[in-house]
Image (cartoon, rainbow, N blue to C red; front, side, top):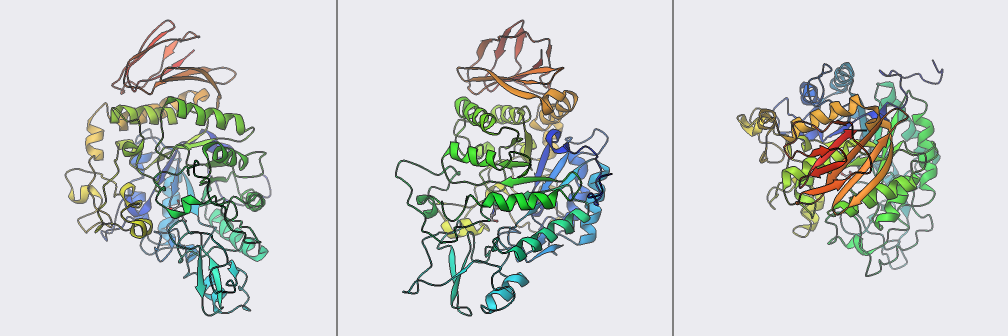
Length: 556
Ligand code: NOJ
């Protein structure tokens, strides 16, 4: 055994994450075991079999990314951490956590935690000390700056959740930086003591047996130390992220407040800490507001050369735009830019409108969603399924009275926030609160249009299609680790190959409502398309007939 690897881990395969299928759980909304209206860790443990029971039952996923459950005042529902090394009482205890890890590992499910290392809560002891005066030992642990001579903020930077990115602290007569809420002060990554303290957080969880980390806002750690103003965005360019047009931040290019070149150095440092562990994976969130290609390039830069992140995701597939040309461009451009890096794909998460309600090209919702999920599982790169996608959960039209997300509260009604994609998971149509708990009022309404029991009862549901595809993926290594080669983009159809030395798999998808007839440049030996898929294709020699929203996978 490599002597530097002192941490427990279940799999010896270092690159397990390349062939794994991830599933994101928003713990507040998964299952509420103690009936207090909030999902919890014991609840997740109880429901692990839905994801993978270790014996072929359940969806068959391999890893869970948990949105944060650390101690937090919940100003941003856990993305404001006040103690990195403990569990918030809303979610349970460290014992519950250890039990969850043990139960997950029994089922061969890896556990990936969400580390929010750009900022803490303003209730974190570090910040309480830092804000108390300018000479305390933690005085330089956050980003402090003097007011301008007229008393105003140090520069024009805006916060993602509204207002200036600076809040005045009378005790220090200075401003502190917060790219998100004022309750989320940014840590000063330029201070080596801060980096070491964060490294100890990583070590704490590695010792407890976790398998990896999702890094929140991984491109925000560095800021321009001269604090230069962000430039105005040219009128013809628009930010990439879904639904953010009404946010004043979108009128600026955030050149100086994030995406700094030295940010990558901080990531290199973190990578050395991850490498102390055993087969630890890191997945960075690279939320860039720049154009599509710049964003994809930035995401790719973070994962090259084996000394940065293992994987990163951008918002390229999480925005409104979707059609064959767009999909093709995102995939091809990523493949061109990423060199020795490994892609990572998702179609939804807790920050954007659910896929079912978002893409601007939906014709037949169910069929299109199934096709997109199948494509997600066919691309080169690690797929992340967002909880509820397996049953077609839709965006809930949240009302002003129900809104909980600070972004929705701040920007209502132009931006309604992210509650609509965070509803309690609907386990059972016949139970109270759709089976989320035993009847206590859930933190968000349990008003989904779909439920798991109905999806399981329908042999053609997305649940069965996905489950089947996950098995196909496991049986065909080319679908997990094979190279990617686009072979045809014709009309609204997208055809590509995944290839290892011994195996070639062909995948075709039709982004339109019309049936398409394609003449494939290769001969398919075996049709592997999931049987649960209603929109069936026919293949005859090299002639493929793809119905609207059709998907085909076959072995050459
Ligand atoms: C990105 C997270 O995904 C989002 O939910 C959170 O509000 C911000 N980072 C701030 O931590």
